[in-house]
Image (cartoon, rainbow, N blue to C red; front, side, top):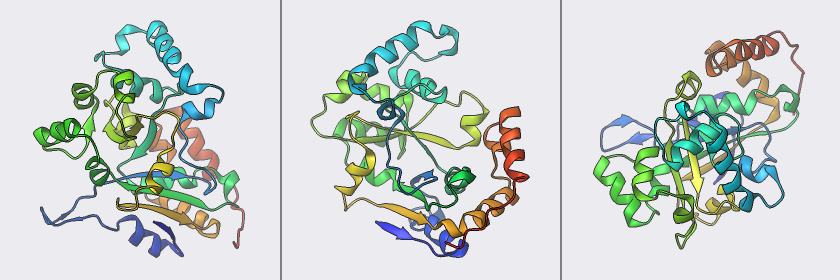
Length: 264
């Protein structure tokens, strides 16, 4: 479902829509969020953006990453752990970055001030409803763990290789938490999605699944600066999400940049 918000207050309501959990009587969201600075962007993975015959190149990229990376950075020799670390360090992979936090998604939707003349978007996907579509072997692992989300280890217990994963008969989407390898992963409240078809985008898959719970929240360009300033005041900034001097400098650059008026 596509929704266009009209104000900061309207945005808060939409971001936290459907987060009440009747079973435990708490506001415990089962949504993954992804913010993008332009509504024109689809949910392409970094592997897709590589271009060329990227689906065939994937196995060569991963093989060489494993060959040349330092072995001591890997404490779990599963494909999902390797992919998590590769994605985290900028290697093109079929993984897509998401967060459990709607405000962190908002940060990524508003961090690029050069695109403040364009509407932004927050994708909000209920991973529990997505996982209900998975084959029985996957659902059994979730049931045994009492969890609606996978870890890399849980995923490896069902499918130990990308070739096995890709041989599943239907296109599927899995959300899983990466290992907490550093403060950036932890502070961004991160999780990944992965499809067993590296040539298909998740948004195209979602649009063919109207029965699932997902939202595409459109943020008008005219309210981007208001959102950005309020996020900064709430300490949702690069200084926190990217610990270290690079994040600090990115935050300071925007903090002292003049606002560009945009009346929409």
